[in-house]
Amino acid sequence: MKTLRPFLLCLLGSPVVLPAAPVESRISAATVYADRAVVTRIADVELTAGEHALAFERLPASLLDQSLQVSGRGTAATILDVNSQTAYVDFTPNARVQELEEQIRGLQKEGRALDDRAAVLNEERDFVKRMLVSSTGAVIYPLGADAAHGGGTAVRPSLDEWQKLYAYADETLGKIAAETQSLDGQREGLKRKQAALEQQLNELRGARGKSLKNVTVRVAVATAGRLEVALRYAVPGAGWVPSYDARLHGADRAIELTYYGMVRNGTGEDWNDIALTLSTARPGLGGGAPELRPWVVDVARPISYEAKSALAGTRLDLKAESARAAPAMVTQQFLTDSGAAGAANSEASLSYAEVEAGATSATFKIPVSVSVPANNTMQKVPIASAKLAATLQYQATPKMMDTAFLSAYAFNNTDYPFLAGAMSTFLDDTFIAASRLKTVMPGEKFELQLGADEGIAIKRKLVNRFAESTGLTSKGRRITYEYLVTITNNKPTAEHVVFKEPVPVSRNEKIEVSLLTPDEKEVGTKDEPKEVTREEDGKLVWRLELKPAEKREVALKFSVDYPADLNVAGLE
View 1 (tube, rainbow, N blue to C red):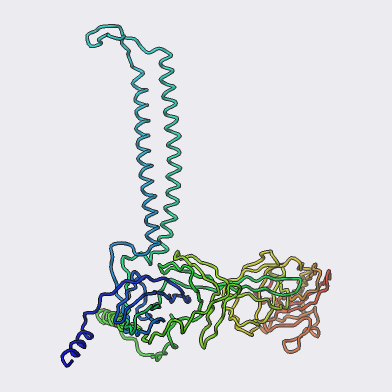
View 2: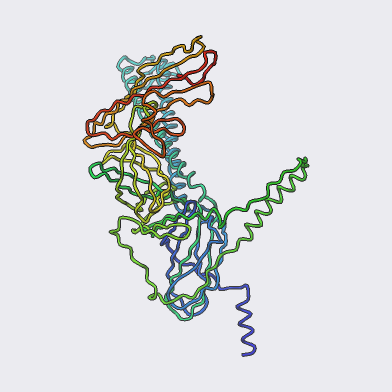
């Protein structure tokens, strides 16, 4: 035993390891972030007691080594280590890229066949044309005559023979022209197909490299049995953005808000029937706030070209060193019996994702299996649907546009954070507008801009504008403006309408603006709001409650006084 134990230790410490056995694996889950995805691959293997090296082959070359994690369940075993190696190959490892390249080669082969057929048709056309040219000088000798020895009499073709010859030429050239035209159409179709395939290929150019990665997991098995190994790794090229459908139900004054995730997979691996999770975390920003460097002010000193080159080289070396220093992460743990931890089954009847709020982010677990091909196109995945009680309000700026825009104010009474994203708005079943939703956290009030509604009619007109001289010596000028805004509620329900009108704001003490209608006593402030309120920038805001079919006329009148010799800008 004294000689055997050192020998065994020497073997375990030796760089020579057991040959890795390739395992069949499948992608079972993916967690998608804004700029990457963490993919989970599962391999079921039957192992004997002892040490084994399991190889997960042909993984994306862009796999981030420092993100590697291994876990599993099954027979009692211990994960010893995991390593990743880059393999360079003479073929395209990505299956979807291979398929596109093969389709393009097939189209190119069809194109060459069409070109060859076009060349044959050109030869046939030239032959018929040469035959017609030569037939104009043709001489026919009687049978048995020898033209070389002067025997017989030359006979020219008859009219019937000429007609047959030209009929044959006309028919043949017509067929050739028709087939040539057909070939041109087929070639144009092939070009369009090839351009579409090449565009798809360019979108997947990140996965076109002639390299891949093989990950080897070394495990020590205590007792023989089945082992399920889960390999997790981060890979760029994937992401998701939020999207919303807001549907206004006018009858019950409620907003039905449907929350979607627009998922993109450009990792080079298709995701077929996987458990999909969307995360709001942003790992690309790092773990902490950036360090603030001192703001130094000094006398500028010229820097030589050599010094600039040296500094630039230092920065590049630091980046390269940082990349080399990033270690691969190995999760080492004891694997328990497979029956101890079972996967929770999601109910397909759920219409929304399960949300988990963490300290710094939230995750949405999609309740049904999802397939996302690696074609880098957006795929819509439902996250949540909520019906929110809403307060409706119409807003307008008649000077800019004689249109009322509907807004709904609601509270996010769900557990879901609504991230900023594109929103499509519907009035019952009619699409009315496209806008954006700002980030709204649970319990927060927010506004939904629902687009124009012709049910509220607005008309603005200039009633009068007149200028006059003021003062005893006529050294002053006054311009008076009078507008009339007419608002009609054509809807069968009472509506709240808010509209704004501008009043000039003087930036010079020689220019005086006076509000005539409404009276200053009728105008409220931010602290004491009334039907009409003045904002800090001089705008007047009217808040009207209109009954069904009610029509309101609002007058606005003001004057601007200034010295006659003063050139005033901004007057209409």
